[in-house]
Image (cartoon, rainbow, N blue to C red; front, side, top):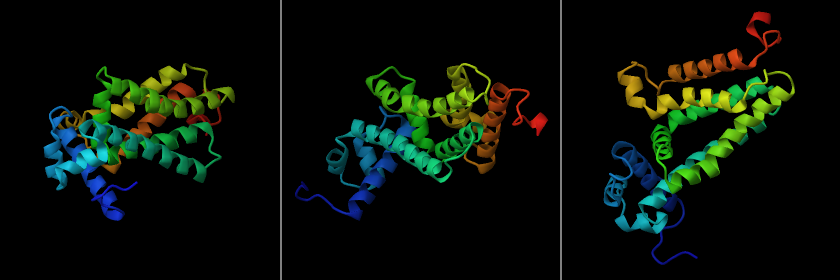
Length: 220
């Protein structure tokens, strides 16, 4: 039931979006513990009470940011799979990787926030791993296992392949400042994203594709 004084319709959605964007920006810049609800309200230009009303406080904001991030990615992935349902395992892996790389780039602040939260032992981190990271891993694992079962991939440890892949995918968006200031690369550029996708493809081909496979570049 709608409460008295509650905004409704499009205005409500826009207000929530502003609050979430402000929280993501400040959590990224100052850390979760270093950010106050008052600062978020000021950044979003909203009444302080609306944050408690819509999100049940700062912790609720963090949980909504994380849930929205993963649910949006999974929705985009489902739409992509529905549009191209007949890809072979390697092409499907690369399609998922490409989507994830550009998704990380487009949601860099929340990507970094999530990775920071996962680096700390906490109830929230365990919940994120249980609900979302295992689901994320299952998507990739299923494709790898299909390729192995069809003798298209070398029968390697799926977990080891995924760990190597994740290391490539996550580091640039967890450590944006280091990538920019030490390696002089721009993770926000299309060129970097394309390079990252190509690097993961090279990893997959070197680890997964049998030397005698017709998919191997030497046999193309």
